[in-house]
Each structure stands twice: as C-alpha cells, then as structure tokens.
Image (cartoon, rainbow, N blue to C red):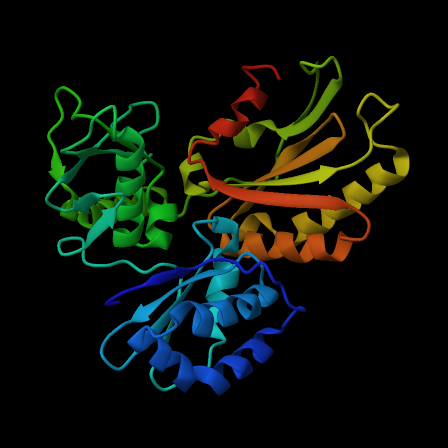
Length: 368
C-alpha cells in the first residue's frame, strides 16, 4: 500500500452485526470510502470511525489497516494483531467479502518486499541496510527457529525503541502469518554473538522457506498410535498448599517427533472451588467432563490432534492438546465454548511449542 493507517477499536460499540450485514453495509458505501482513502480527506471521521464499530460488531477482536494498493485500488486489511487463535476467523471473514470495484480485501498483515521495505518509528529508520540476523542452533531443540536481530544504532539508552522498531519491521515485512507460524523465537541484541556471521535481513524469507521445507520433509508421515496410550494420574501439592490432580498421556510426552505437532492448545475452565480445597463439586465436574468429551470428539487423533491430558487445581481445570495446525482446533474450541457459555466459564489459547516444553513438568522423569 502506498500509505496505511491502523484502525483501532471504537469506544462506541454497536449491536452485533452478521457478516452478511457488514458487507452489505460496506458495499453501499464502497465508492465513497475509496475516495476518502485515496484523498485522505477526513480519513478518521469519515471512514475509520464509521468502519470500526461495524467491524467490531462482527467480531470485537478485529482490527484493520487501510491504504491505496495502487492508484485505483484501496485495500482493507483485517488483522487480529498476531493472535493465532483468531487467524481462521479473520480468514473466513475476508473469504466472505464480495467483489467490489476499486477495493481489495486482505486477511492478516501481508508480506512486503524485504529489500525495499523501510519503517520509520520513534525517530529511527529500520530497513534492510541496518538490520541483520543470525540463527541460534541448539542441539537439544534442533527444529526450533530461534533468531536474533541486530540494529546498527542499538544502545542501552534507545534499547526499548529499537526492539519495538525491529519487531514491527519484521512483522510488517514478512507478514503476520509468517511471523506467527515460521519463527519460534525472535530477540533483538546489541551485537552479533561471538562466532556467528551476520546475515542480511533481506535473506530472512529465503532462510525461513528453507527451514520450513526441512521440517516438512523430516516429519512427513509422523504418526503416534493412540491404541496403547498410558495415562498417569499425578497428585501433588501446589505452592499455596492446595492439591493438584493431573491426568497425563505419558506415551505422548515421551514421543520423539513432537515437532510434527507444534501447536499447543490450552482450554481453561474456571469454577468455584471454595470449601473444597480448590476442587469442583460433583455437578460441575460432570459438566466439565462432558465439555471435554465433546471437544475431544471434534479433534480426532487421526486428524492431527493429540489429547495430552488435563490438570485440576485451585478452582481451575486446564485441558491440553497438541496439534499439527491451528485452524480446526481454533474453530472447534470456539464452537464448543459457545455451546456451554451459559453453564461454564471457559477460555482458550493457542501457542507454538515445538517440543511441548510448557508441559515438561508432567513427564514421567519429573514431578509436578
């Protein structure tokens, strides 16, 4: 886009709008909105402040960028600001968009040309000429994509601004999806580590494509049978003295191909455990078990979803899955939660953890 402006959430929410209603409304104003974006005449009050209440009445987690793709075409980018569990809903929203002359609709912040892209932030310029990277190789976790960025003008005084600018540069250059799915960890450091060679940042996409191809080939066809799963009942005392009860699939936690299922979903159910050492009452426990069974039925082992187990502690139950990808599990969790929203307080999160290190405390060689 020749220019873009981020559209933040409105403080004046409107009634819930269906996706069809949103696009009907947008279509009726499309020509007007395009002219406003192109000419930047009253962009905030005439377009952005009218758009966001409508967009967030469809989904309150949606945000947007807008600008001119070329002289004739305006672009509206809908983003979840990097929240992976929302990606599929952004994609489906954009897939439902009608064809409107003079407009292009894009799901998630798209990649740009790394060689030509530059970013001005807080008085600093970020581009391929002043950012380099190097790749951390760790024998224990060889499949993780862990990179460090260096910026030529990094100092202790400007550290926070430089870190923010470098991360914004990467996300806006390689795109929101690539940032979330192809990089496991990224840090900004003052200088290249001893023994490492700096790599120009415009080689990053090529590097990520190569590493992704390696991982696909390495784990193609990786499968763990669920026929002989061994679940261990683990009991311990939490830091506050309350009991911790976990039921964990030990076979899966010892699997040597965890990186084939790099996405972890944690579903959290909050309940009232007062007077019961943080444990649920019988009725609540039955309801939580039913919720868990229904969610698990939507995420079959054969489809690339591994049920790892659950933990109950201090008025909260957490349910764990490892998955090959995040779209199906995002929708399944959201749909199941919606069915129980009047009976249970449930939230969920999805994050990438190639070696399931966030669950290491449950491995048989350790204790919780």
